[in-house]
Image (cartoon, rainbow, N blue to C red; front, side, top):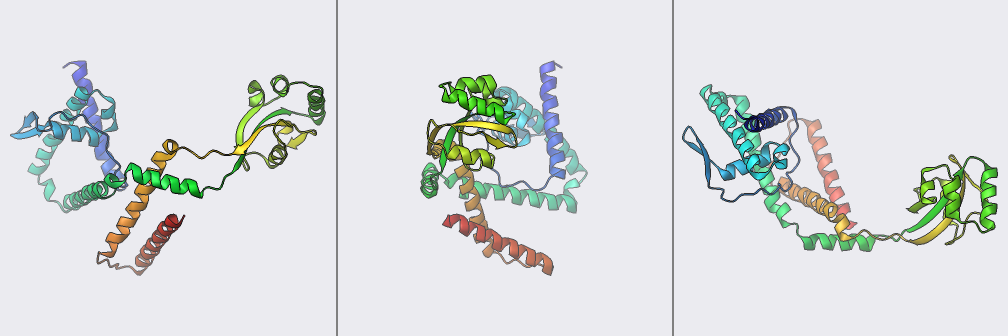
Length: 308
């Protein structure tokens, strides 16, 4: 057997072992997100026949998505071969399991019912929610969120950090004499920004230690502190480079986040609606109380999100 063939079989076996182990030890998965696209030229094409049962290209491509993330890293044909090997192994063990009537046990029937419900849940989530969130929805939510944002001032500043007050005072004298702030920072500052001439980039209130923040935001563009500013790190000389309203993120920057928010909100909304159509009873009073409280909290959170 070639090394190539061995590696594919090993990958298939690993996928099945990991999948089986995960199925036995992990909690039910969260609602399935959109599955990675797979190349599927002719899903009806038969790739193998096992005991008279045909395995099609469509089944193999589906298996390559479901079984193991490692398959996604393989070229298409290698992925199909590894998934086909895994499917043959599955059918081999499934055949033996049926011979031993393992599919007739109560434990199997319970698990099978759960897996069926979970698969149907995921399909409904995809068709009723995922597929219905479009670019127009995302843009509308983006514009709503942007309109609600209060402009926040941010400042771009440089600083020079030294150990003593005397050092800082000497640097201020040099600045008063016409020295360039950037040059002094490169030569004297003891922190990592020295290489960039003390440039700290843009920051808003709450991102720096209070003493530094207060002094920096009190400066106008181009001004520097006339007295050393002491913080837990040492003594600072600070220069303001620019002040502006913090730019809002672009749609492209937050598109995925907004999509996730919409999916989560619509999922909760749909679940709450469907639950109200069910006849649910609890045999344990404490469980009933906890479940109702959780449901009310979920609905409250959803209403708050809509308001905001």
